[in-house]
Length: 167
Image (cartoon, rainbow, N blue to C red; front, side, top):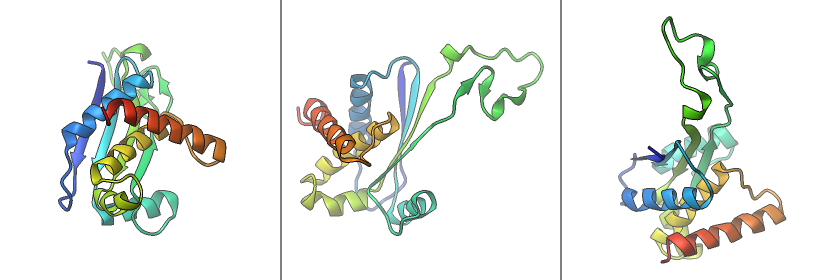
């Protein structure tokens, strides 16, 4: 099965080419060494929904352009905690090697991306491409809290965009 990307466009304000962003995500994950069974979700949501997530999870007011929610749970034999309490008689749990690696969710607000694009990445598509890559790198453990990490993450974003978006 390989890497699976689930995408949902839950807004109707800005057109989103979901197929294009799924392909970019697959290319980035492959380039970053994600192999075997892995799952990632990409959600495109409106400003109200993004503002709610931003407030709830980061304590910040208003919508942002992208949020990444990595799945930090450890896989345990029999399932993911807390579901590993007992699936019932006759259940033969898959081995840990057979359980898909759940990477997490990348949530993008196209309205914010469209507004930020002229002063940031250029076009709306350039901005969304950057947000897809940025969100995935967060899921894979990169961050930009300190300057050295930020520089490394920005360089990796440029490299990946050059390889898979601006070809």
